[in-house]
Image 1 (cartoon, rainbow over the protein chains, first blue to last red):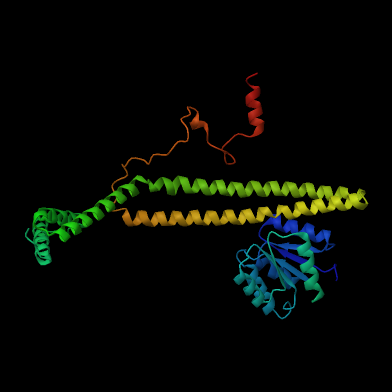
Image 2 (tube, rainbow over the protein chains, first blue to last red):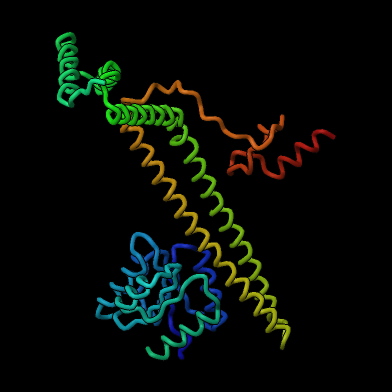
Length: 126
Length: 220
C-alpha cells in the first residue's frame, strides 16, 4: 500500500477535516489536502493527482453523493478510490452510495481503526 | 312537539338573509351569516324534535369550540413567537454550535502539541500516550454530530415559524385585534430575584471575565 499518494478529504465541518487529517498522519499519510464541499473537491481533483478521496455526504452546494457521481462519470477520475464518511446511516443511503460506485462507507462517529481498515481495503483493491 | 322540516328551516334562514341583503345592499360577512343561523335555530328550539335538538346542541358546541380556538390563537401573540421566541432559540442553538466548535479546536490544538512532545517518549509509554491522543481525536468527532443535530432542530423551528405565519395569514382577518390577554407563563418559584435569571448570554450581550474582575475590584 502506497502511503505517498495524495489524499483529498472533503467535509464542511472544519473540525472533522482536522480530525481526519490527524488520524491520516498517524497512519503515515502525509500528503493530505482539504475541500469544504463537493464542487471545490471536484475542481481540485480535476486539477491535481489524487489517489484517494475521503468525503462527507451532507454538504452544499454539491453533496458527497453528487461528487461521487461526477467522479464516476469522469473518464480521468472514474477509478479513483472513494470512501464516504457520513452520519447518514440509513440503509437506503448506503445502497444509493453503493449504486453510485462508492469504494467504502464509514458512518460517523467512527474510530481510527475503522478508518485504517477501510483505507487499506480500498487501496489494496485499487 | 311540532316537528319542523329541513326545508322550513332553510326557508326561514334564507328569508332572514334576504332581509339583511335588502337592508344593507352589500355582501354579508360569514360571521353575520353564522349569527343569523344561530338566531333562527334558537327561535325554533321549541319546534324541534329530540334528534334535531341534539343536533342543534352539537352545532352550538362546535360553534363554541371554534370561538374558543379563535380566542386562544389571538392570545398566542403569534408576533412574539415569530419575532422573539424562535429567533432567540435559533440564536442560542447557533451559539452552542459555535462554542462547541471553538472548544473542540482547542482540544485538537492541545492534542497536536502533545503528539509533538511524544517524540521523546519510547516503548510502552509512547504507545499508551499515542493511543490516548487517538481516542481524543475520535471523541472530538462529537462536534460534527451535535452540530448536525442542532442544525436539524433549527430547521424544525424555522418550519414551525413558517406554519405559524400561515395560520396568522389565514386567520388574520377574523382574529380579534391583539388585545387578548397574554398567556400566563408558569413560574417555577416565586423568587423576588427571578427576573435576574436570564441564563447564559450570547456573545456581545454580556460582560466577559475581565470586565467582571474589574467590576468586583471597584468595590474594594
